[in-house]
Image (cartoon, rainbow, N blue to C red; front, side, top):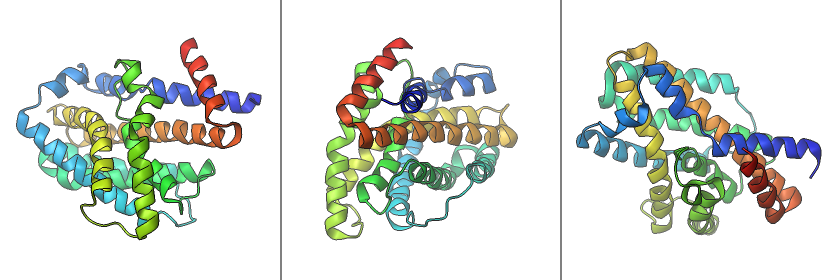
Length: 259
């Protein structure tokens, strides 16, 4: 592997295996964010699960219908838009989540798509477009979880069948059919991981000390987290196209063990 590609691989491993969002949110609110998330009432958990699934459904439609634009957008613009939507979430709390989360998710998805293009992805290919949505599952892993269940390649492996089936379905039909079992399965799998991070975000924004200003900061960290994960994910996919999946995975695991 060329030195510059090995350096890129090392950056990818850092982003994908050592997510920083929980630590950043803990620093913002001054309390362990995981504990705050667990203390949310059952009604909040249900609202988060519903909003997460809806946000991903909307994101999937955007991914496959409007991502073909060749005009890349500034990553700073994406962060500014997500920050503004987060300010509303911080000011008005859980009640705004069904509106704010889909907006934030679409903004993040457009940013992820730009990163994908920069790493050579062809977003007219349904599999590449679905890989953008897949980032929300890859970014929803707890850093302290069992690596055998939550490592980057483990999560990709878990999603591989549903991604392949969904891509084939979309390629054959050319449209998204509401309620299609293969698409529902894909969304459900991604949502189970994405919901972990959404819960952390909601927990941080729910604290009285956070408010609108803090809500904006939380959303800024939220989108930056997924931008970092996307960068790592699409670096790996680019390297796989050059060197093959087996070599890249071998080198990835070697680098991961060094950290």
